[in-house]
Image (cartoon, rainbow, N blue to C red; front, top):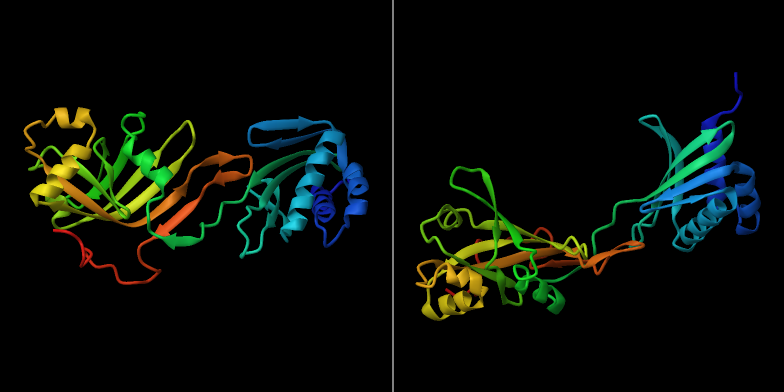
Length: 287
């Protein structure tokens, strides 16, 4: 029987990566001694093989962890896998590392790297950025129609793609609803809260919106919202038999894309601070 303890080998790997246990001058030798000649390193979208290349990957990761003050923990067994984790301090935005380690005959055969979940972006005042405004206004033309959810009179959630969605003001959206007698219009009369999602699979831009929807009846606002809708939407209701809806946003969260280190251009925009009372509608909202 083998006397090798995989958990002990993984613990030595953790120590080699942790600046509090192994200084950078000794790290290369410590990793070389632990890695099998044919070791492999895997991360999202790429694989590196052979001990020297894997050692460089681990050294680079250790330098980042040291420079950002990450804390290494583990190893632990999770559903039969050996896992080592590095957490960044709570006041820093960097994502940490989750390493799944495979040990064979006392040597590290494979390290699979995954990033920890991103922390919420710092909160800012709710004002739709110009680049996001463009994404919303061109969503239908660019073949990325926005998805909206609301709660129907039956108490069930309902989802629908809305091609007429546009930016209304700096903190609100609008859309033209062709069916004035439809379920959505009747639902928001008593349950105005809605959620929306924008996703561009090419750029990976992803945004979630939450707010409160209401019908507007004054002629000037109706005309403005109707004319803002894409032509294809207006062609389906050239008689303007539908209704105009404004969505006062309470929050926008998301990111502009994905890069080598994860999400880029993250935003978290809030109308109200955490725990503040949210009225059904803003007292200053246009009627």
